[in-house]
Image (cartoon, rainbow, N blue to C red; front, side, top):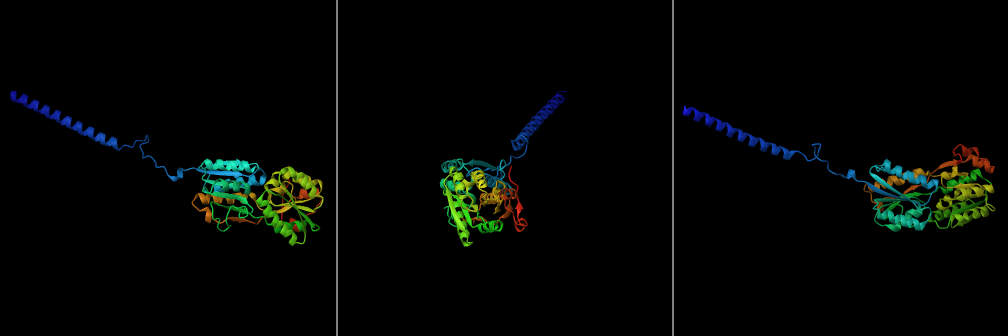
Length: 352
């Protein structure tokens, strides 16, 4: 009987020891499993941060407000987006407008540099020059500069040599003057109006004056230093010229309505360089598309962000345009547009 009780007790002790050992193994196994579980709530490995998560800051400085420069700015933003840098997604576009004030542009350019811009786009020569004065390290893209070498922005168009490259909008001056003479075959005295304070306007004016002389015509040169002088100057020109040629010029463009109004008083036709000025009251031109100009600037900015060195990135030259004519303006001035011109030109309606 005693032996039987002893056997029962030993059996119970064995069961107890086996249970304790099994519980210990289970607890250890659970602890090892818990150490392997990822810390994030979804139970998956946390993603690594890559370059795709980076946001690039694009500083855009526009020289002043007028439709041509507005179109270039929008084209630049579109060009960036088309080439992988979308505002509000992987790019942050900071826009500033200098309203024609060079001191203000210098301040704005410095501010964009200090804000940590990865690339800078200058819309117009004065804006590009403000950026050049503010930094020699951050890449700068010129949006529509007529004479980048003469403006001191690049060493040459083929090899810029600095932190600056971009787009040169070289007006097809000869084609514009040829079209003018086709419409106005009796014109002999051709006025050239531009701002004395803009390098790009002066360079284009010199090209136009040379071309006018080579055509056997008489160039009549007038300059203004500010928009305040435009009305009086156009009135004086209208007394002695048959037509007025207008180079690319931000000062003139910002007060173009005044130019049109005063020229219309004397029935003097305007031959502008910029395409958007035909709808504003210009008679005709061979105009470079300003949106396309901006798009090329945005494309080049994207390539620089991708790693292209601006110092060896050749300046892109736009020097071909479309024939444009404003029939409403022609009728207002009593000018008949030849069929030969109409066959090749796009008719532009006046802005309301």
